[in-house]
Each structure stands twice: as structure tokens, then as C-alpha cells.
Image (cartoon, rainbow, N blue to C red):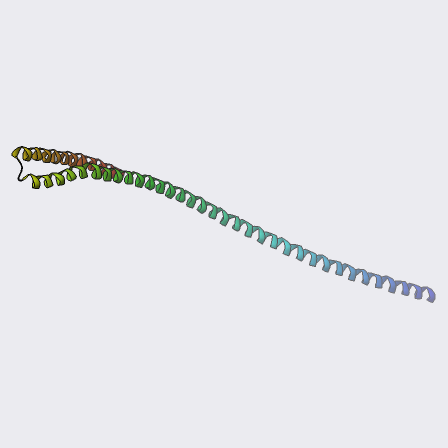
Length: 168
């Protein structure tokens, strides 16, 4: 019986040791699971943080895109305005060229005639009255041409100025 008690004691010690080993193993596994849970929780928190960061970045990009669209519209509008100004400037240059043409052809010709006639008048002072009347007729014709031109030029300038005022 003593032998049996010894065997049972040894078995009891073995079972107790195994139970203690199993408890330690279970505690170690619980600790590993706890660590794994904490890591998983930490990764989940990082994912949530990253998701929030992505949402905020997406929102910022949306705002920037709206700003870009608005600036593109402003740029398009400014470009259209510049084209309109360029066309207006081109028309203005054409009008100035027309005025220069009118002045150089329609004013210069009567002035040149008057200069020539004044020279003839100086020479004709000793000539006959008939020549003087002829010269005076040419002078009147040149003065009439200047008068007609200045009236036409005034009308033209009035139209140009009116057109400019309407554009403003």
C-alpha cells in the first residue's frame, strides 16, 4: 500500500505539474492573444486615423479643385476681355490710319495748291488782272476743298467718338 501511495503521490505530482504547466501555457496563450488583440486594435486605430486623413485630404483636394475651376473661369473671362480689347484696339488703329490717310491726301493737296498759288500770286503781282482773278479762283477752290474736308473730317471724328462712347 505504501507502494501504491508512493505511485499515487508521484502521479499526483505529475498531474499537478502538468496542470501547472497547462495553466502557465494557457496564461502564456492569453498573454499572446492579449498582445495580438492590442496590436490588432492599434492597427485598427491607425486605419481609422489614415481613413480620416484620407477623407481630410480628399476634402482639401475638392476645395482646391473648386478653386482651380473658379480661377480657370476667371482666366477665361479675362482672356475674352483681352481679346475684346485687342479687337477694339485694332479697330482704333484702323480709324487712326483712315484719319491719317484723309489728312495726308485731302488736306495736303489743297495746302500744296495754296502754297503754289501764293507763289504765283507773288509773281503775278506784276501780271494782268485776268491772271490774278484766275489765281483767286484757284485759291477759292482750294479753300472750298479744305472747308469740305474739315466738315467731312469733323463728321467722321464725331462718328468715331460716338462709337467709342458706346463701347465704354
